[in-house]
Length: 252
Ligand code: ZN
Image (cartoon, rainbow, N blue to C red):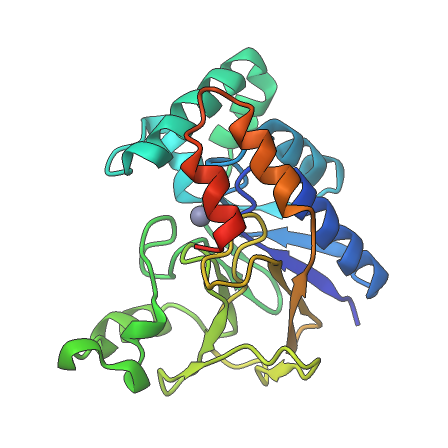
């Protein structure tokens, strides 16, 4: 059975991407599916794009690719600064800009649905842990929002966007990623699997996050990489706010 590395939210972090792809290869993965946000925030967006193109990865569009194309509407000033800088780089290499413009927002494989945010709104919608039934924030019931997405899938769906890994099962409960090597068995049935972020984890664990998928079992992985070097690359780029490097060191 083919083992696939599913990665998301690389955000121009070339060291983290390399570490993840090495780890996946060492575990027997032979293909890569990328759920978007290859660019944005980080200092090596073109290198990350080129690596995934070279690897023949299946790639969909994230909200940061959308922002590079349309402008960073609704982005905070830190994220917007990185988008403007990235857009400038892409204009200098038109083949990369054309590649980003050509990305679709959903891929259905034989065993999975791939989107960046959610099935209901592939590029933009966040599906947070706090919206699942066992985390009823302030007594609000988010299940209609989740039900809307579950109606649009008939098999496991892989997402990124929140930068926090975990599973929302068909009961709309949140399942923390088992990191002891145990896999999560999807049974091939609808569920929403967030693979976390390769290049900017936001769950307090600074290691790169991704998942391996054999068509049924999801294995969550965390991988060490040189965080200080990725932060330094951002500090050394005057157009990128230093906070974008600092957050890599702090994991938010
Ligand atoms: Zn992202």
